[in-house]
Image (cartoon, rainbow over all chains, first blue to last red; front, side):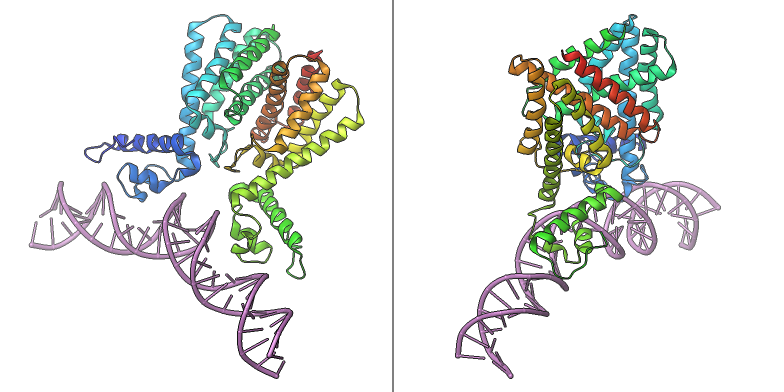
Amino acid sequence: MEAIERKPRSREQTRSGIVLTAKDIARREGWQAVSIRKIADAIEYSAPIVYEYFDSKDVLLDEIRSEGFRHLRQEYERILKLYRDPEKRLYEISLIQWEFARRQPEIYQVMYNLDGAYCTLPVYQSSEMQAVSDIVSDIIFSFIPKSKESIRKLYFEWWSISHGMIMLTMLLKDQQPIEQSEQVYRDTMRRFVRGLR
Amino acid sequence: MEAIERKPRSREQTRSGIVLTAKDIARREGWQAVSIRKIADAIEYSAPIVYEYFDSKDVLLDEIRSEGFRHLRQEYERILKLYRDPEKRLYEISLIQWEFARRQPEIYQVMYNLDGAYCTLPVYQSSEMQAVSDIVSDIIFSFIPKSKESIRKLYFEWWSISHGMIMLTMLLKDQQPIEQSEQVYRDTMRRFVRGLR
DNA sequence: TCAGCGAATTTAACACCGTTAACTCATACA
DNA sequence: TGTATGAGTTAACGGTGTTAAATTCGCTGA
């Protein structure tokens, strides 16, 4: 983030500078190292300026989290356009999930309050999260048009397996090679998708 | 924890008082609210005293985490004595896992660095965690005596499903009734165990 | 009884944190 | 020229983990 200098910057640029810097520090030093003052330093402003863009650190984290869910949603919709087969769709979306967590672990962490990332605002009532949930639920529904309750359970199951494996992979990453975890992930998700029909 | 007064206390009592207080604050206010000074206040000592028992906050959290894994191991071994059928064993252990997370969520959180709990010391090289892993792996092995690699994968799978569901249940607890999540958990774990034979 | 020692405990400090009030300062307009 | 507006800063408050220094206390030996 040292690329950012303090010359001519629009409000929008400063705002996204804050977000970028926060993510950058989180990626390099972990979320517990992200502080308002450190962000302010990086964008070459004093700390109170950050509060002109975000009411609190919590709100900033929430924004980054929402951004993560939005990005995920876009990827999901890309898959929807690419494939028509529900089986293929759900499997590819599972892979998207994996790739996302692998490429942007710090975002994944703040989305689920993992590893020092801690956002007070409840995630379950975020519309962005609801959107990604709806996409996956709809795919499952097109698979087997059962009751809303059944779909909910199946989605909960899919989500749990995917998220659980991703989390444990992160946890054990220095002990168990990622390639191996990825293989298990692929196999398990494929089996889950197969098991739906 | 208001029961603790400062009269005659052995070193051991003070030490466990620190641990108890930390867990108590975490349970009531969340891990991000746990501070050395607050613990010291509760046990009626000044902050530096805590450092006579624990080198750092990190070490204190690590101790609580290890305690959690030890407790889990004891429960697992209780199940081993109670049942001989591997299928029954694995299923019952799955239920233990659920019950533990439900009854002592703050311990579960610190074990996996969830929701503001953050312990720097790596969990994957804790012998206590290894012990519980070994128990479950052994059960799976007695189920289907395959290669070490296969067992590892199956254990990873079991752990992911269980942990994933528990985590998401915590995350969605205000949105999705726990009883419902528990039902899905039981069904899924039963199905997993069945699928092993 | 009292001096002195050693251990137990506290106070004070450092460098950080999130957050807010008060202040400075330059520009734009009357 | 005077003043109001807005951007940006400094300074402060109460909190954090942590450590060094100071203090208090109980006990031993004279």
